[in-house]
Image (cartoon, rainbow over all chains, first blue to last red; front, side, top):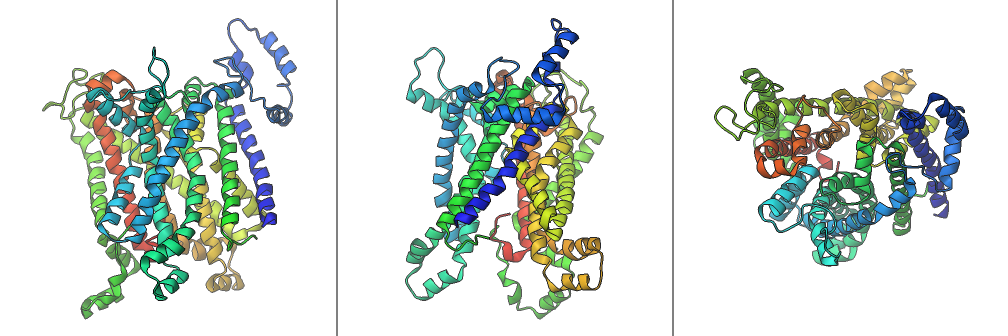
Length: 315
Length: 305
């Protein structure tokens, strides 16, 4: 098993290099950082001098390794628009995003696990049909449109919830105020995650219920409820772990749109602003970070999987 | 979804049993598809929508991109869905936009599916370093959060319809390639494929004539969910002004005006119809995909994607 885990880590290394390579390639496609600085006050000659100083006249591959060396030391470059280190900008904005994602993850799993399991155990029942139908509709709603409808209803028509931001301007920040600001973005994020999660858990549970060992358990006559509690639920842990791993990239994507609509002061909004301003060092810094987080979470999912499931093949 | 297909063999009517025995594969698929009621209704809905997308711009007295009335006019007999903020007819733009959105989603799904099939076949069939190389590329692309990658490319290559099609294809092929690969690996050891190899058939023949047809069912099912996803992605991108650019309408960029709170509050006819239209189309595509899953692969009806 340790060999398998080591092998998984070894496979992740070329992928990590590939991520930095793609990230660097995208940044190079975006244009040279010199052009981005070029303005009326900077002459071509001064630029050429600066280019040599920064090593940008060297071959691309050398530049890539220079960049990689800086990267390992935690230097993600400077934001063009805000003139601040990318790493510190990310640091300032990561908190609200982590809060939004964390609460949404807990709520969506808290709803999806019972719904999916119930739906599978009571397959073909009315509740099953309803849950599956709702999950289909949930996955078909664009999250930005749901956000607009919610703002329209709860802010503009009913006036009960704020339309955006994380705190009310001019008031002392309080937990209650932040919670009120969180309700709508969290609802949108949860809806966008819920449908797929329910269907995934339902499908995995149906597969488990169809296994021979469960048929044996039922044949022994120990009662349907006990079979599900004792045997099936324990095995449903595996698909649930898988889902946790799958959520992270989906939530990253979701946060870009949701934070934009709700002016939530997090990483997603920072990224969208950077994209609209074509602030490439910042965009690529965030992308790189996100890709590494996704890679690591996939790796962790695989490792936890092998720890939980004794029957998995370690080849 | 939850359609029960287990009673196929319990038909008491001998004639029916005979006609089922005689039917072609396509007829079987169609018969099973029809039994998924929501899927069948969705198919009819989609056909009607496509007809309207073709007919409305032809029959409408208005040019979808032309200023034809007062601006911000509420729905009336002349403009059933009102006009937008510069005075273009919303109904004409809605169907023109739906056409553009469907075209973007269909072309991008087609491209990513074709690329995914070819690379997945190569990967699964040849194995070894070809497989390792292609799979690591899919790992790299899939590590980036999907929408982030799309937005970054849109920022670099300038948003626009064709660029969006290519960008969405680029982020969608890896999942398809992996799906094809896993199916190919299961099929390539089967006797008839081995037989072809012994008979000296070319690799291309074995891949495309022997293996591919047997892997088509999961490919089609997956393509339907990619289609639904690309519809949603085009909408999100265009809403964020990084997708299809005005004056060309798409369902997403029609919603772009709702970024302004005064539009959101005072002119609901400008943003509710395109939003509802997107939901209806995506729901329909998802149900069709689900019916397709039941029809093509009855054993896997309980499985996800």
